[in-house]
Image (tube, one colour):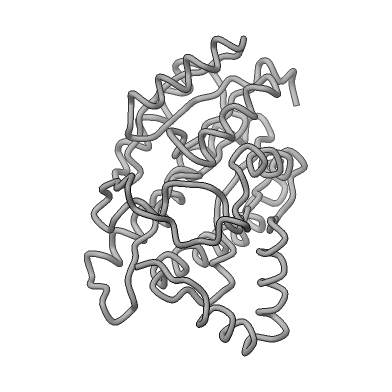
Length: 265
């Protein structure tokens, strides 16, 4: 790797939550940070904050639901920065509702955003990453391994992300490019406050247990560290690791625990 001051990281879903926190962490490490999401004003505020702290940041809006938007963003990164060393495919959202209630529109929106958008982000980043023995970070969820009542579409999308990561780890052998799939447990985010149409409701409560929630800056540090170390699969938060382990060996117990726990509406 070259001096980190020359290295460029592209983060999708960078306007809030984990993506925003990772932007600050990569900047702290000396990377030039390319911020992508749909909410331009928020991205510009984050870029300004990074610049005030002595870092470099560039705003390139992206809609992960549109392939042309992703391709154009990747081209703009090279035009502006001249290289790409890390891509973090973080953009995503949750579609809520039991399997019986979800229609084709719900499923298509969930999979288009969390799976297709992620895969296309990697697709258009890869030619540039191969020039620098770069790194890919895919943001999954412990939900990829667990039952997800009222979040079945989300869990299925994250299981697909896990599969994409496993596949890339084989396809990229001998290219010098690594792929790290990261599966967080509960981390503070807006995910529970965005409805199935993508509308944000700040007044909506988050049903996840507050005592198990990780702050975003703490999550960002371990996620960036995992990508830097080129780990293949990384599950974090203690409760997340415990549940995934229990699901492997005691699935009946996990079904009981989750059935009795809080569920999103």
